[in-house]
Length: 250
Image (cartoon, rainbow, N blue to C red; front, side, top):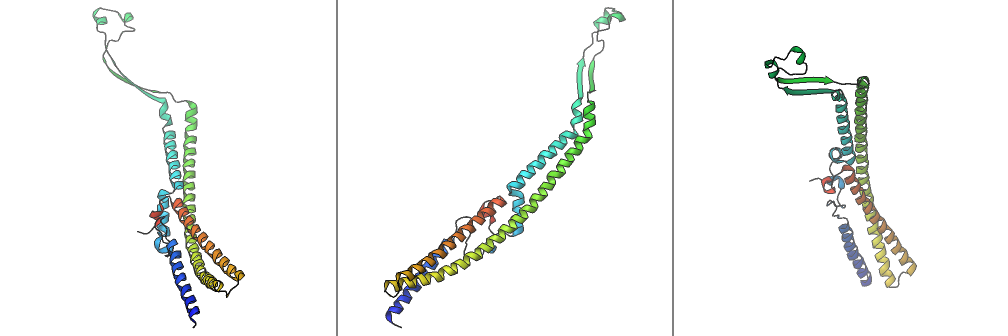
């Protein structure tokens, strides 16, 4: 092997090694400390664990739980609506014994209290409309409660489906990134070989430019795929309703 060829090959190998290490370094993310160079399936919680987290923390689930609480309270108020027409009264009355001592006759005692003691009473003023609508309001409240429960069950099913789809998308996109990285490394070898040949006058500028363009294109695709993968992780964090660090196996 000629000395010039040996130097050219050594230069390419050293540059590829350095560039591959640089590519690997960009795979690390400070977002939840996920390492995109490692299998995400080993770093993420299981699908069931993610789903259980979402049942407690998902914004949609929290909103639906609040709607259920509102309906429960509305039904409670409807059941006690009849009590609004019932009143209680208590009091203490003091006698006026002087009326008897003065010899006032029966005709003069009409408005005179002659005995002492506590008194209590109950009064009811329930309208006919309230009575007629009572059972209807109860049935309506029960139907509304069943409706919000059914909606909650639908949200749960949708949540499980969305988490599963996003989880599979994450794993698939990581495989795509790995394929791009392999193509990037191959393209890098071709580009650096072409660069050395061009500088030494063994390659025309058009072929060198073509090798440079192909390497640039695959590198852009790799970075776009990596950015998309990080976007998937953020989407999963928002869907579950927790910080990204809580999605990771501890």
